Image (cartoon, rainbow, N blue to C red; front, side, top):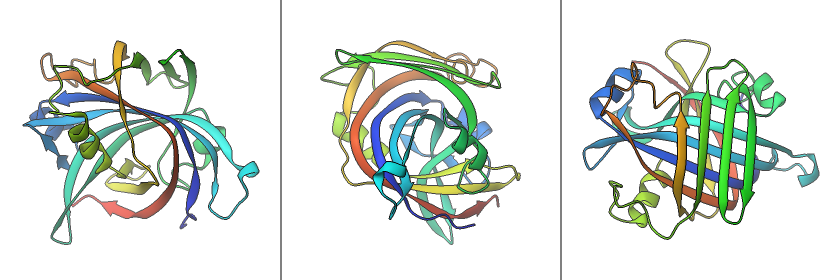
Length: 241
């Protein structure tokens, strides 16, 4: 089923980013994806996004739903009809919304897992704690607004980081059918990021030694977006080749 264009507001979006040995990502990524590199590293992370007034584009605002969501993502590229494309591969989506859980992967793109979110926002500090109902996802992020990226970041500037992640607007998610990926494109009507200074970061995905051997992954930076009008557009299924 082709879903209508979905519109709403990104009330808050935190991009938590790790730099990763690309050979490790090669072992994780399914075909046809391969890592998109930045200064010799692969980039992966979690998007923590609170959505408001989400509804089909021509519906009134008051019928829209609100939800907290998380998407584990890896920056990728792939060939499509002989042309290189780029975006993100999403191996896992979590949500506070029962509707997203029920209809994700059926009516609209991406299988969503029901999760509990605990969010605190005050005095330019942001804390998000996430535990999924199936106990597969555990995540804690705590940080405050900053003026610059960490000195250890592989990005030369905030603009370079912004450009890299803005290019990842097209995401493909795992589905219930092996080798088949749901496509969803985010179109933001404005794009502005500011740095976050992260004081606490816990992730059972990225701090998993069997998946990411010691020394193969390190926190790089975090970015914040607020109050972004946007649309979601479904894209055709992508198949492993």
